[in-house]
Length: 137
Figure 1 (cartoon, rainbow, N blue to C red):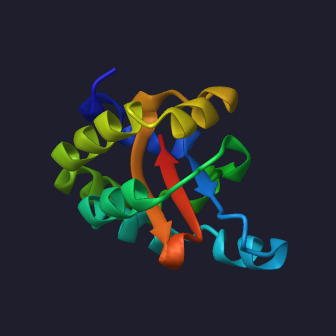
Figure 2: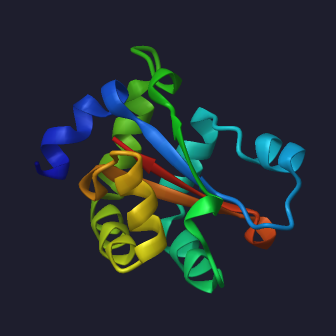
């Protein structure tokens, strides 16, 4: 399925993966792992920087990856904002998918949560390696 053909279906099946480092407490992980429309749009607009941060993470394990459904974040009133960000970042999204395809931990986490790699649209690595958010359609 091409990126163009899936842009309008993003609301129906959006999800996010959060990767938390072991030193983060459960309470910090929950708070820092909260998903907002702003997080998604910011991640889409900063894909290159987020890839660099992801590549800097060491010793990532599948237990540090959390999949979160964000289906209800974008409704008819704000889905156009998401679609504009997706259109602006098409090439970067494809590059991100290639990077993630070479990250076995992320791939395994996505697979174990039945999230196809071709549905990934963005990632967000929290400051200090506190987590990674991988949004998917």
